[in-house]
Structure formats: structure tokens, C-alpha cells
Image 1 (cartoon, chains in turn red, green):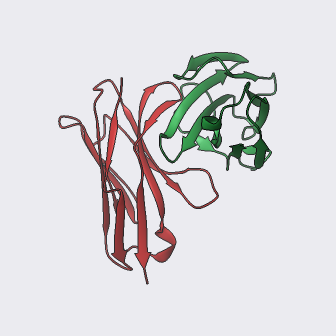
Image 2 (cartoon, chains in turn purple, brown):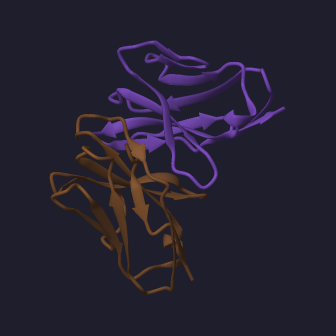
Image 3 (tube, chains in turn cyan, yellow):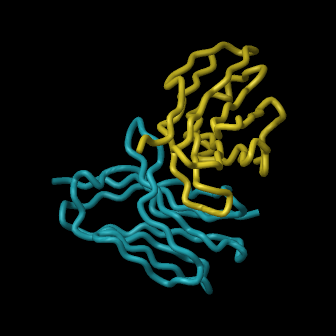
Length: 111
Length: 113
């Protein structure tokens, strides 16, 4: 079955720096790759997603890139702010509504 | 528009008991899926419901079950609770089965003592 690996597990940056989180997946049949942000006491919030027919997608300070050949996808956050501090999860689909999640990255943005 | 609503927010049960968790999807959303989140195993898919039918099931024992009502609201049930069932149970909804954007609720934190 699908396996999603995520790195790093923790990431500390200064406010204004960029942050990059990387994921790899194993099942070449996966074609949808969302990223979720989870704040303390809340459920995961969808922040950006990408489909396998697209190489890059951007939404303001957040961008996602996908390399289908290498089975890699990454989240890029520019000009980080303290409110970006949270746990970020990547995921890959293995069927309708069924996502396999990475293990999460705890991002800490220091003022 | 209100988000996904899960009740109760917290639950404390003892081993051997059973529990029912409730989920109201975003208005207009017809597909509901459930996930379990633990520090050790992360986020894991439990099952998916659409049109009152279970469409997909994760690798969990039969003690975990669910259902969906005609108004798309869903419940999940765990019988004969074990200590390892302590987790955050998350419900997610989407417009339809083929709409893969999942919107999660805040979850129900279940503690089994």
C-alpha cells in the first residue's frame, strides 16, 4: 500500500525566513496531494493541494511542487510569520476520500 | 457557512465500554470520512460513507463501526474499548465522493482508562 514519508519532523525558523517541508510517496497511482496545517486543539486545515498533472501551485506565501518521476512533493512557505507555527501534514490519496498522511512537521517561527 | 461539527469534544471511558461519536458535515456535503489520530500512529483512515453506505474501510478491527444518515450526518461507534483506542477521532466531509478536498472537524478526544 501507499507509504508517505515526511521530513523534517521539526523545523525552527526566524520570522521572515522561508520554510520547506518535503514528502515522498510510494504508490505511483496516487494523483492527489494535499497539505494540512493543524494548530493545537484543532483539526487539520487544508491549506493547499496539487494534482499529478500539475508541477507547481502557488497561493500567496504558500507553494507546492510535485516531481512525479521521483515521487517527491514539497511545501514552501515564504516570509514566515509567528502564526505559521503549527504542525504540517502532507498526504497522498489511495482512493476516494482515503488519504495516507505523513508523520507531520512541527514548524516553529520565532519573532 | 458552518464547518464540520463533532460532538462531544471530549470523552472519558473505561475499558470494555462502548462509545458513539457524532459528526455533522458542512451543509451540502454528502461524503463523510473518519480518521484516528494518535501520537504513535499518526493520522489513519477508518472509513468513508456516502449515500448512507460504507464505501471504503481502513485496517481497523470490527469493533470500529459507523453509519451515515439520510441528512449526511454520521456516527461512529467503538465497542469493547481498549486502552489503545485513546485517540483524537476526526471527521472530514467533502461535497461528493469524487471531490477529494476533505474538510476536517476539530475532533473528539477519547480517553480510555
